[in-house]
Length: 103
Image 1 (cartoon, rainbow, N blue to C red):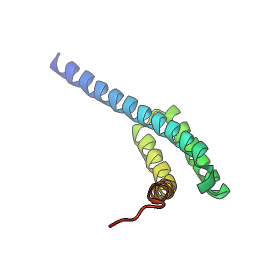
Image 2: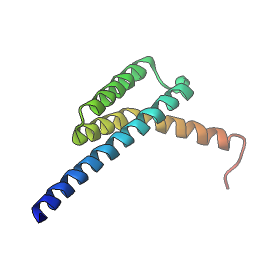
Image 3: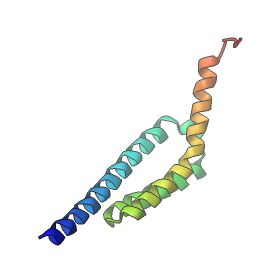
Protein backbone atom coordinates (compact mmCIF):
# COMPACT_ATOMS: atom_id res chain seq x y z
CA UNK A 1 0.00 0.00 0.00
CA UNK A 2 2.84 2.37 0.86
CA UNK A 3 4.67 1.62 -2.38
CA UNK A 4 1.46 2.31 -4.35
CA UNK A 5 1.07 5.69 -2.69
CA UNK A 6 4.71 6.56 -3.44
CA UNK A 7 4.27 5.49 -7.06
CA UNK A 8 1.10 7.56 -7.36
CA UNK A 9 2.79 10.55 -5.76
CA UNK A 10 5.66 10.36 -8.27
CA UNK A 11 3.19 10.18 -11.14
CA UNK A 12 1.22 13.12 -9.71
CA UNK A 13 4.40 15.19 -9.41
CA UNK A 14 5.42 14.36 -12.98
CA UNK A 15 1.95 15.24 -14.27
CA UNK A 16 1.93 18.52 -12.39
CA UNK A 17 5.40 19.44 -13.69
CA UNK A 18 4.28 18.74 -17.26
CA UNK A 19 1.13 20.84 -16.85
CA UNK A 20 3.15 23.71 -15.37
CA UNK A 21 5.62 23.56 -18.26
CA UNK A 22 2.78 23.53 -20.79
CA UNK A 23 1.10 26.49 -19.09
CA UNK A 24 4.35 28.46 -19.05
CA UNK A 25 4.92 27.69 -22.73
CA UNK A 26 1.41 28.81 -23.68
CA UNK A 27 1.86 32.06 -21.75
CA UNK A 28 5.23 32.72 -23.40
CA UNK A 29 3.79 32.04 -26.84
CA UNK A 30 0.93 34.47 -26.15
CA UNK A 31 3.21 37.20 -24.78
CA UNK A 32 5.66 36.78 -27.66
CA UNK A 33 2.89 37.03 -30.25
CA UNK A 34 1.55 40.23 -28.67
CA UNK A 35 5.07 41.68 -28.40
CA UNK A 36 5.77 40.97 -32.07
CA UNK A 37 2.52 42.62 -33.14
CA UNK A 38 3.22 45.71 -31.04
CA UNK A 39 6.91 46.10 -31.93
CA UNK A 40 7.15 45.32 -35.64
CA UNK A 41 9.23 48.46 -36.14
CA UNK A 42 12.21 47.13 -34.14
CA UNK A 43 12.28 43.59 -35.53
CA UNK A 44 13.82 42.65 -38.88
CA UNK A 45 12.19 40.20 -41.26
CA UNK A 46 14.98 37.70 -40.58
CA UNK A 47 14.46 38.02 -36.82
CA UNK A 48 10.74 37.59 -37.31
CA UNK A 49 11.30 34.40 -39.33
CA UNK A 50 13.66 32.90 -36.74
CA UNK A 51 11.22 33.82 -33.97
CA UNK A 52 8.31 32.24 -35.83
CA UNK A 53 10.31 29.04 -36.23
CA UNK A 54 11.14 28.96 -32.52
CA UNK A 55 7.50 29.57 -31.67
CA UNK A 56 6.44 26.69 -33.92
CA UNK A 57 9.02 24.41 -32.30
CA UNK A 58 7.68 25.35 -28.86
CA UNK A 59 4.10 24.79 -30.00
CA UNK A 60 5.06 21.36 -31.35
CA UNK A 61 6.82 20.46 -28.10
CA UNK A 62 3.52 20.99 -26.28
CA UNK A 63 2.00 18.09 -28.19
CA UNK A 64 4.82 15.71 -27.26
CA UNK A 65 4.17 15.85 -23.49
CA UNK A 66 7.86 16.08 -22.64
CA UNK A 67 8.51 18.58 -19.83
CA UNK A 68 12.24 18.79 -20.51
CA UNK A 69 11.73 19.39 -24.23
CA UNK A 70 9.19 22.12 -23.48
CA UNK A 71 11.66 23.85 -21.13
CA UNK A 72 14.40 23.61 -23.76
CA UNK A 73 12.16 25.18 -26.41
CA UNK A 74 11.12 27.93 -23.96
CA UNK A 75 14.79 28.76 -23.37
CA UNK A 76 15.47 28.72 -27.12
CA UNK A 77 12.66 31.21 -27.71
CA UNK A 78 13.82 33.38 -24.81
CA UNK A 79 17.35 33.55 -26.24
CA UNK A 80 16.02 34.59 -29.64
CA UNK A 81 13.69 37.27 -28.28
CA UNK A 82 15.98 38.72 -25.61
CA UNK A 83 17.57 41.26 -28.02
CA UNK A 84 14.10 42.49 -29.05
CA UNK A 85 13.10 43.02 -25.45
CA UNK A 86 16.30 44.94 -24.80
CA UNK A 87 15.69 47.17 -27.83
CA UNK A 88 12.10 47.79 -26.76
CA UNK A 89 13.25 48.67 -23.24
CA UNK A 90 15.91 51.03 -24.57
CA UNK A 91 13.36 52.74 -26.80
CA UNK A 92 10.88 53.10 -23.93
CA UNK A 93 13.54 54.61 -21.66
CA UNK A 94 14.71 56.98 -24.39
CA UNK A 95 11.15 58.14 -25.01
CA UNK A 96 10.51 58.59 -21.29
CA UNK A 97 13.66 60.65 -20.86
CA UNK A 98 13.27 62.66 -24.05
CA UNK A 99 13.47 66.35 -23.23
CA UNK A 100 14.38 65.81 -19.59
CA UNK A 101 17.68 66.47 -17.93
CA UNK A 102 19.25 64.10 -15.44
CA UNK A 103 21.12 65.71 -12.58
